[in-house]
Length: 390
Ligand SMILES: C[S@@+](CC[C@H](N)C(=O)[O-])C[C@H]1O[C@@H](n2cnc3c(N)ncnc32)[C@H](O)[C@@H]1O
Image (tube, rainbow, N blue to C red):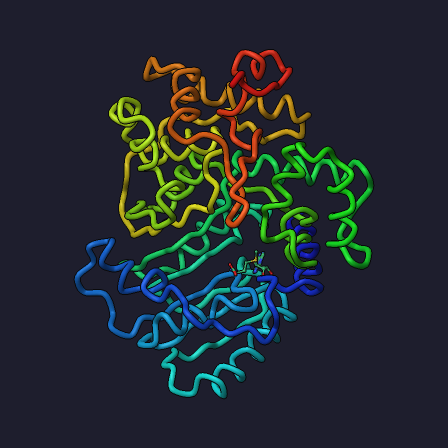
């Protein structure tokens, strides 16, 4: 089964290397500081971090290793590992182009390996980057433990993880495409999926979600977002428990303000005063469908309190859309009950303080029905979703 997942995922990225950008695209203005190991060491309060760190970019795709090499020019080496040889070929081509087009830009040397991460072992790394990979492996807890075992005692990990419940609309689109028999194997996936989405009512949240997702613009993006061979994100409390088992503690979140645990404080200071664990806050935001961007998390070695409780996991079994939305409400009930806080109070607060999603500029039109707080909670509980009265 595990072998099967890796085989299918490899085949997908052989056909559609990630990210879905031109093979000639080079990082121009990269968020260098955000990807610098020096920043991670500062965040972790680590004083004697090696000056020439060894860095692993795990599941690097066709671009990330180049960006990390540029953000960490002092690194002794950036080791880039990916299942997909096609992705590594594009990476190699980009590197040649970068040397020609950006000859004076300092960057660390890159050494690439085509391998399943679970079968890859090397000397200890000072920093490991794992971005947008965890949801595509059969046993995320095993991969995290394996990566942690390759980390030096002072080592840092930077994870970018897909949220779980907050990708509900993408999951609903995946369900719909599967139900109408659409998969990644035919030609022109973007054209086929776009036609299927345009057949939905213009106000259908699945169509709205598809229309504003930049991944919908390319074949590789469409396959990655909606026709993926294995897309099973880890819920925040499960991730907390895996990292705890690996002996890693969360030291910082670096996503935009509205996809960080501190957003709970901005929306509802009274709730934030009760719920202090960043993991529980992330779980609350996730179940509320508010984690619109993938959380970016830095970890260092160390222990942190055992995370609270297992979650209900609204996304665990394939269900109807109404059931999925209802499960989010029940998950919130479970997360908030120990604090004597009602799901209704929290969602009312979200509706007032945050409101519906809006399309990116220039339209900025409201996208009613994408946020859980757009709905009447009683109707969600009874399995008949309808929008709140204005
Ligand atoms: C969504 S892409 C992310 C690429 C890159 N990290 C980024 O964020 O741009 C996922 C990548 O993980 C790789 N991958 C998935 N499972 C893997 C595994 N078990 N071992 C190595 N690479 C894997 C895929 O081949 C793919 O290139």
